[in-house]
Image (tube, rainbow, N blue to C red):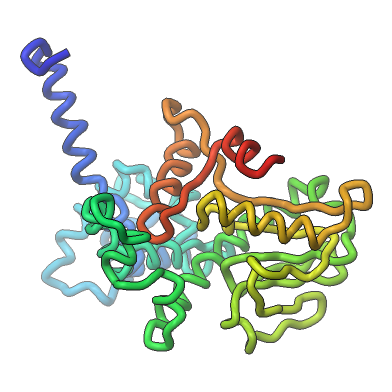
Length: 324
């Protein structure tokens, strides 16, 4: 159907749809603003719905000349589903609670990481990257890989934010894994080895739990059933009964994923003797579906491209590429 064949209603609907595509960045920018102003922490601490006047009084960081504009941010947050409104009172949704500082499962570092100018600038070069021979859009922007960039001492703040972001995701998902998926990792593996892109792992339900990331982990100290091991997962993975790959394979192209999994196979006993490799990554469902889970899946799929030239995968792609 061409625009000339469309009704006025259809054209206006299409225009509104384009507006929403263009202005999609406003949602995450508004969320970041609410976090920076302390709105989420004040509502979290208050523990019940709060009127705008009381909320404004608690937000000492806001310039008095801009207090009247706070209502715009609040009503946008309500319309987008980020906050609840009860008459003239506001409260957190379950989702917005996950960005409160004192929430045990808070994910605020993920928001701060993805709004960092270093990563945002790579997105602006995505079109140019498709036309050049640079390995990633991050290379096009900064002249080196993401891993080399955050490995430099002068970029320690970004590196720490990256590790905190992945550690925060681990807290939430490990809780789900331990609570809901005990059948996956067994009752008590003798050696549980984790390859993760972060500096925080849990050792529940296991006698010994290793984590490997890179040479930068050499100075980290474990304790109890946790031990850090510096190394290169493409060359060697210490022997273990169970190996966990969380948010690892989606950072790499297929041929590199195969290399990682081959090293895993060399390091575990046979399936009959309890050897396992557990993969935690986003699995892509039918893109024609419309729900929060599927939208998040395809956001993650796009997220892997600028910095890593990598992707998320469907179940079919995973089985085909990894011969599972």
